[in-house]
Length: 536
View 1: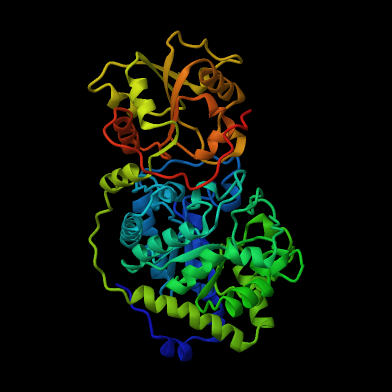
View 2: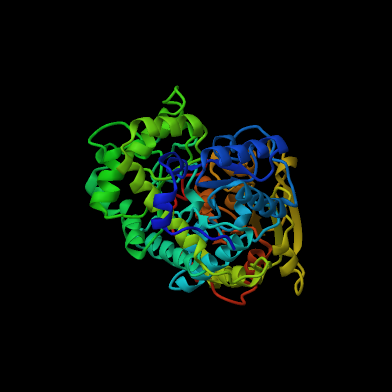
């Protein structure tokens, strides 16, 4: 295990130039070319970079993730990640702080690694934060095995906008107390394994329909309203000991004295609200510096990095102009300003590298924990258990609407019962869709192609029209294996019952099948509000 100097040792050893280098956390890409890897090694060596934030590939990172670049599948990404971390650490004069976004596990960035449920699924669990603690613990174990120190999690955003293009399923829900409690449970689980945490995206990215990767969201709420709601989970996480806070690229005029400026480059937001008013003394991390919400505002290289640092960010994440940014900070910043940030960053490093090794090399097996979560989160949104029992007494036709999903749901039901099943794949639906089945009782399994709301979660209007026609003309029990906001596009008022399973994992389908067969009652609670009567 690498050793890191104490702050007092480092304070006298590192030059001011080296200390400025510690502010930078550029992106590292698991699936990169040898030329790009060598280029990053030189950047680490020559500019004394403080840390790296890992992404799967250039095609999937930050502003590119919604683009047309193809994300290449690499089944050996995890081994590549571990190898690259060792290689980059070897290139560094001082140990690097390695970070990643692993909100629902390393699978958020890396193929063939454990995946745990989205935050919205955990938000449906009632009175069992121990399960969420365990999720954090397992994710942390996997991070630690990889050589990662800092997980940019938990998401503290309260999602109260159904059209939010970037948060949505990543939030625990729209209730401030639940978001705070579950965020703390996840955080404590990660910290129990020695992984550093980060509350994001301050001051709250939930109530916006703009993606800050692509533009600057504006939130027109009073400061008192924000303190009572959006800022509440951040305050609770700060009080509970979160290691860092990531500041989002959001314009919140009530926190910036009326100025239309991103929080990530606002002294009023960071030094005023976050530090002075909310009392946060830990490390402040900028959201990705290449995101268009702010990157398009600065044309001269280095100016954005200086603006973000001067506003109060300690770590400049995904900084693309390290040399120019470092030179500008050295030119403009007071030494005490640099020293304050350096001290906070180095404190994180002491914490990260001071944790004793506890682990082997085996990644966690998520199956059993995910099954427990599936049992506790499954939500009977409409209808009753008795309605489903009555429905089972009739001949039932099963219809699957999905895109390349292996339907374990119907397989599990058919183990002990005969169910006539009809699979409908989205891509084969014509303009009018297929004819409605002759059967009266329809068990409908809906698998949204996307978890994000863009383009109706990946469903064509024809597919949604067909679903609405089914519900209107037949007796339908609907099981949804995906983002519950999909139901805003479906006229569910005439459905016999609606059950939300949240995830399409095999184990979630197995649990949903058991529920349909009456083996247990749904106890989950929808963590958001829906407008089910507003179909297309």
